[in-house]
Length: 229
Image (cartoon, rainbow, N blue to C red; front, side, top):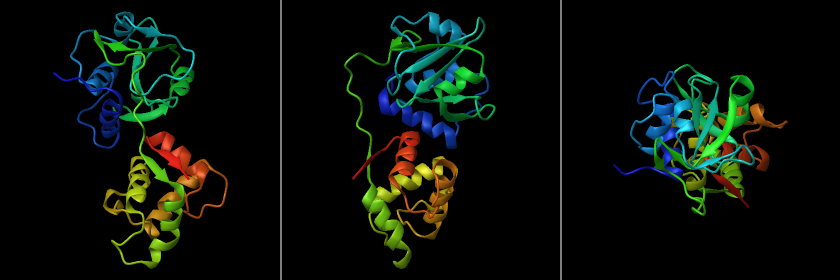
């Protein structure tokens, strides 16, 4: 079977946050290997970690799309790195569900030893040194600000800068701040309300629903896009 690597593996993980294909309770290794479309081999994450051949330590930030590991003398834990110090993991915020969380949060709160990351999982190489880092989608800050200010005065379905707005809307949906039915490329009232909630959770006032660089950058770090202009 064809393995998934890099952004493709992360996209699978993201999909499990909002549309899980199964209950992931205590199935961290199963979740991670399915992100990579890799078959079963080890019975626990701890055994999976000690079965890796290409380990890296805890220095630095793990690249996008690699397994990150913890051990505790028992089952251990594994997640998949999003490349920015966060990872997609089961059972951290919600039992049996997948969420994006800081690697450091798991280390502090789960009482396990963080081991770093590996290039392989279950005997399959999923990352190699020198592998190109996929370029994240770009969102033009000035475009999104323009749309947030002007779309409310335009007919529904005729929003400005729909491509940029759609990326931001999908990220707001992934954060649980915008219903799927309002993800339409139109930065009107519902967009402003949802973005204001994100501002309140991440940055100082004003909470006006018009994206600023700091809040948009944080949203991009959580949801796999970069901010330009």
